[in-house]
Length: 162
Image (tube, rainbow, N blue to C red):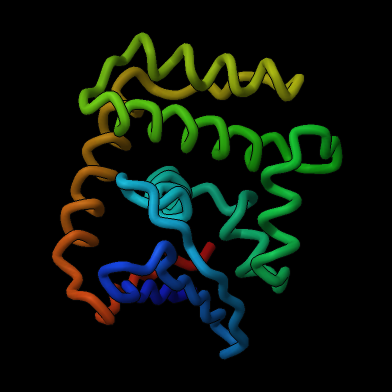
């Protein structure tokens, strides 16, 4: 699936995300600016780096429109949601906290993931020791690419097929 992210104008509060599935169908949404890499792009890093296909972008690639996928993936009470989707959301939230702090702290990252999963009454994912750092570095690299996109320009990303 291709992600096409368009930076709107300098004073806009949102940018645009469009997901084009392999069959040519598409869905999209406005993506709020946050001062750090947007949440949906952190999802891209986590899901593509870990190769996990049962989370936010996996739902979209499977045919769910972006609005319902967001609602499902961000509903902490959604017991039908697969653990992998919850794990991705927890990792994304913890990475965003690390971005806001301006540095990576492995213990804080792990605690953020644990807390986010516990609040949702889900298991905590077992991640290899360096995974948090690798994800953080990948997020920083994508953030740098995103910052280089000019106003009204686009960034295209490819989510590998399962």
